[in-house]
Length: 614
Image (tube, rainbow, N blue to C red; front, side, top):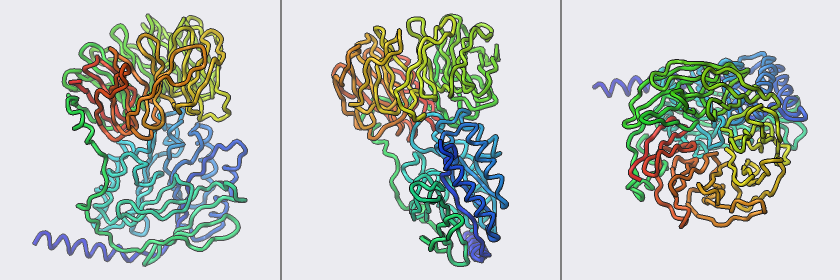
């Protein structure tokens, strides 16, 4: 009887919501504000003017990649242009707004007031949320805190109420946790998923949920750009391309309005964990699932583990069992991998502070206030902390009290990685196209190097450099490995024969420079001042790969992670896989090797895992 009453209620609700009063909204995507010639800005201003000239637009939705590089200036400019709209508008970020963000995505929420939205119009619930990656390159990813938000919002949806979900990415395997979203939406009367990212108008299907990708607002090779007008009618949702100031083209796709009753038992492809059975001697001794993304490498000291998350919480765990010992909340997201020294854990935060906490109890011992977010990771040598931030500077701090020793202010982009200390030089990259070498004692610029590309996205910023015998090695998104004279900053040689993106490493004896390629393969080069080609290649079968997860050698074995959540251990002497273990389906950060039999691993989706039995 109870089930019958629920069915009647659902049928009544569905019928009621089917009587939708017709309306029209504008659907804009991929505006990419920040173009060198101002064309993107002109395209968006033209679109805003066009929408304002109409009298039948209920609201506007924008589905991400609002800016080109997510800089504070680009975000503020986009907001300034969009503030000219005469109708309500709702906006979410995409990978271009978060992947290179100097604030770790904070400025988007600060300027626009949110990075997700939920509103109702004519009985339809519209839900939109952010997607990454954040700061590090990887597949698309709906952040863990946004998934939790979606759970809460869907609980508010009335039985039978229509839902339209919006995200920058299509809900397919280009988004590493797509299934978490589709599984949730299939429990509701989800009429459609709207997305961008592909810069084209395209009808799609996401596990039986109708999908629509909208074109980019950019003109590309055309005279002007464009967007979509969406007409919600009593029986259908119709999409038509609009060329601002000229014409509305014939409708190119339409969705039938009907109550959706998805078969939640129908099987669809899901991430494959069978590799864990293939290498079944490696196990997760414990796993901790954070409430937010983790995009950094954990630190370990004796019996404790330390790692921060995107909600700005630094947590101390017991190494033995993963139990939480203490937590410390900062005012911004933590992308900084902590460093340990003299009873302190030191790290940067998106709130603009470098923090030093007591390892035992998490009490704040000192803080240094930078001029912007601190996304870079510290390196500690003796009593000195070296760290870069997003205020166009790199600093050396007194590790005992946080006092400034020196400050180098010659950068033109954020530092997001860990520096290298080599031969009294601090060497690091920034998202300004350059690799820098500073005198570690004074902060004096010794040299700066770049790969010759004018494209900021090709900066050597995410790679942690390695060095031996007077040569510094680095890899950047231009897919070259570069060998640089450590004394002068002159290029010794460059090679792209293996398409290494950003992940490199070095053998303990300095003989080999390791690289992770973009397709299945680990390679090694002889360390040398003379130009080298790959000395050996090892096929690992990890597929397309582009995350900056460095290769770490310990006790003769090499460890690294991939974008699909798999951790590998290989024997470089014989070029064989020793074991592999999948902990998640999102990006694995650079791993922390305790010893060759135990490994601490974090994944972007908020997993912290101790792998053992290796």
